[in-house]
Amino acid sequence: MVMDIFKLDESWRDVNTIIPFGLGRIGKRVLPKLMETFKIPFIIDNGNAGQVYHGITIYNLNDALPLINGRKIVVLTIERIYVDISAQLKEAGYTEYCDYCIFERFVEEWHYKYEGRCCLPKLDTAITSRCTLNCSHCAMFMPYCKDRKDCELKELKENFEQIFQLVDYVFEYTLFGGEPFLHSRLADIIECLGTTYAEKIGQIVVITNGTVLPDQRLLLTLQKYKVILSISDYTAVNLYADTLSEFVKRLDEYRIQYYVNSEIEWKDHCFPERSCDYAEEYLPEHMRVCGYTCHSVNEGKLYYCDVAWGARKHAGYQDQEDDYVDLFKIRRDCSVEQAKLQILEYCMGNVNERGYMSLCRYCAGMGADNSRTIQAGT
Ligand code: SF4
Image (cartoon, rainbow, N blue to C red; front, side, top):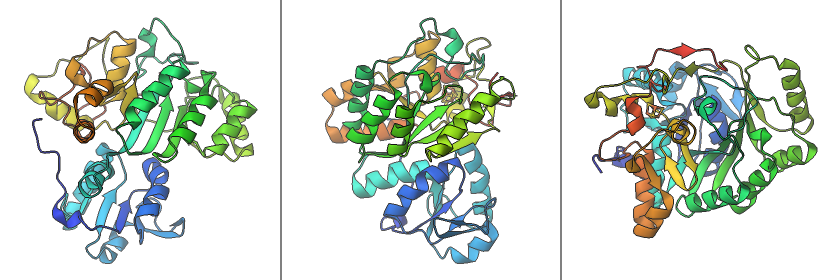
């Protein structure tokens, strides 16, 4: 491995109180679990200041500053937004890794260093390559997939078993596709995660476009396991507003939690049609700036980003053996402790000796160095 992955200083050792910064999509999904482990005196969120969340007051940063009193700030957001928040905190006199850090680092580094546990913020599994839409800029490259099909339940169960032999806890486990509601065994897949791995998963999430109406059994399963649906609203470019209304109505009837994401930002990854060709020396920085935190586990292989998995599986990209972690292989060849550390290092960006995924050379990514924003759902 080429770098020291741990960055938090020793003052984090006895932390039992944290101040979350950010109550967006990530914050709402993970805060209930964080509240079970840590004391949370208040939340910082500039957009929701003045409101109360689960009994906890929300302040904007200026009002929060006099109340922080040396307690650690954990920023609940993605890398792109973290860069701005980090600049605000630095301006207010705070130091990264001493006074604050991003949620992903906190989860992975803190739990390993002080509890010896392999905890991840998020894992994704693609359960089908079938979809009701055919977006040409799909980040999973579905239009290039010649053999659209659902993953077998048995294979999915084996995949879950492989990852949970080594991962002690994941705050959010996301099922996606394609369109996961097309999978006839979706209820069984959720049931498997919700029963067998109940102690290891904080929140099950399903990403859907809301085009396929769930039947009663599926609704009851979603309700039983308190699944959150992340609904990508593509009605601005696809005509299914009536179906989406009915979809949401059914969720309301069964009191299922969901978010409708209407202002989704997509970026053109350029691969494979107009592949980029970044300079070798820039590639580690390109991957870091991309800040992709949706690690993907499929067919017993852990990929740093969903995109790399999608390129291999659906667009015929020939990746390299050090692009992914083969879970069966590390379980066979390493001690459990070594394997856990390897998973953490990989997810924290230390993916291989090169320092980047081979696909990063051709893929424009999601970072600030890609200005090709496009209409979601196209
Ligand atoms: S730039 Fe690299 S890390 Fe980012 S999405 Fe593309 S392949 Fe994944």
